[in-house]
Image (cartoon, rainbow, N blue to C red):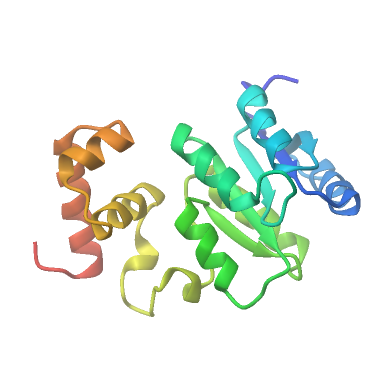
Length: 194
């Protein structure tokens, strides 16, 4: 199956529960834009699968054997910025959603949500958008944080961690001038003086 076909987004699902993987398969079989190309039952296998299959999207359970979902997300994100990472878990408190956000995921979907929420999160992640509960990313109504793109969020996160423009540029593979442009956009969107 070619992932070069732009009529659909290739998806890898990683979960240690066969019933969840079968449900994802059934869900995506009915989608004209999302195609499940492979599955894995543990984190280490999932990481290798993402590296070899190079999908556009990955659904990652947070609690995986051999390599937990958050560490998997961190490792994938360190190597690839072009993949949409959607984390799932049974947690509905927002705690694991925040951890997923900080690890570099594009979205978090509690397993108690309707399947339509998962497909919507996948579609958003495929376009580079974030999909998290407001409480998970610390975005209050009107703060502007919820309007930042994934890349702006990443630059903002690195700035908050104390990195300088040149360090951010090196980490993200962009020029320091591009980092300055991102800082300008972030400041404008969240209402900070420039």
